[in-house]
Length: 62
Image 1 (cartoon, rainbow, N blue to C red):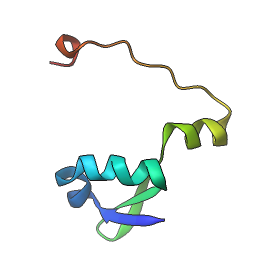
Image 2: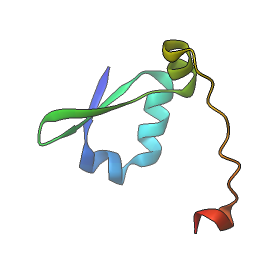
Image 3: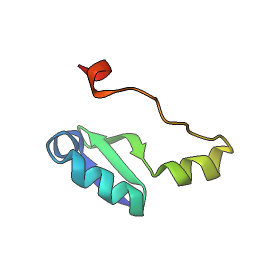
Image 4: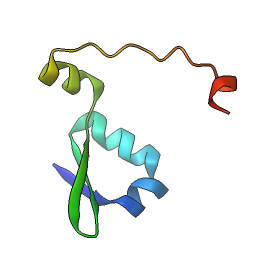
C-alpha cells in the first residue's frame, strides 16, 4: 500500500487517482494516516454497496 502526504495528494491529484486504481493509497497529515483512497471496485467489493454516477454536469460543479 502506497502512502503520500496530504500536500502531495493535493498537488498530484491525478497521480493519486491513478495509484488508487491499482492499490489503496493512505493519505497522511502531519505524518499520521487520515484517509485511504481506493478504487470504486474495491469499495464495492468490501462494502457490498454499488456506487452510482452523480449525474452532475460540468455546469453543476461550478
